[in-house]
Image 1 (cartoon, rainbow, N blue to C red):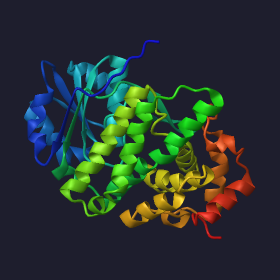
Image 2 (cartoon, helix red, strand yellow):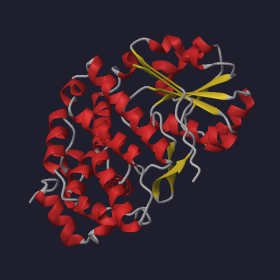
Image 3 (cartoon, helix red, strand yellow):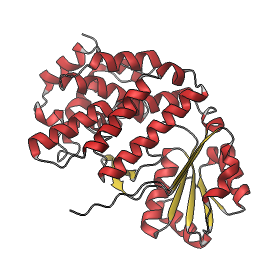
Image 4 (cartoon, helix red, strand yellow):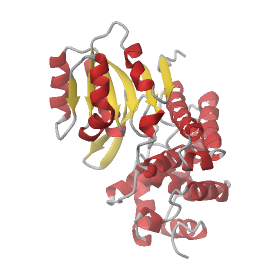
Length: 337
């Protein structure tokens, strides 16, 4: 068996480290990809430090953005922004055989250092394997300025690794699927460390934000080691994608956190511990707090069965139906009993 593991070559985390962006240029010709809001927050500054062109992602198609990158003659894309900007950069880099340096402006997601990119499809949101960024530059003074809700979404996304890894173990037992113990343990460790530091993260202390960022980067590393999103995405992500299809107003990480509660219940795990940690952090733990009706939450549970059915999770294992879904949601308090 031959396995290729790709991980970021350099990671720099701390307050004020945006000024060190040149350390990630090496011998490359850079270009900055950012969004209209994140350009003001950090993109303009990074482009100024590097003395390079800047592409602002605002309504352009992926094809148009690829053309702009080609016209810039850059071979390294500095993705300065949130999940959409970073995922777009990873997809462009894969197609054009470029490198990416990830410069996140919030910590709402674990795509910061992962080889996985989310893409919009006619059925909602899907994911594609790319390459992980060659570098990750995280300025905590920029992250601290992001809305608190984004920070809490990152907490939900990381805590969701509990149910994701259990689903992966289930797939290995029932379907003979490959499972990498190290990647699984690494993913679980990120969830435990975040759970142990929820108060620090809630108050956006330097220690708390550093812990969360390190956990999100470690989650990306786990995916890089596994060669798939399995260590980080299971039944809780299926529920989140189902909620997206049904028009949920909540953030991805918020939905994943609630999904981890109900899926851990179905797995026979300690769902109360997960719910308690999310509650202490200030994350949503109910359908109502997500801005979703009880009826829509039940519908999302059933729709989750149709999302990536080839990925064996607790949803497939219990042959989820309306009766099981309602009981799980009510027993965990996700919907009213």
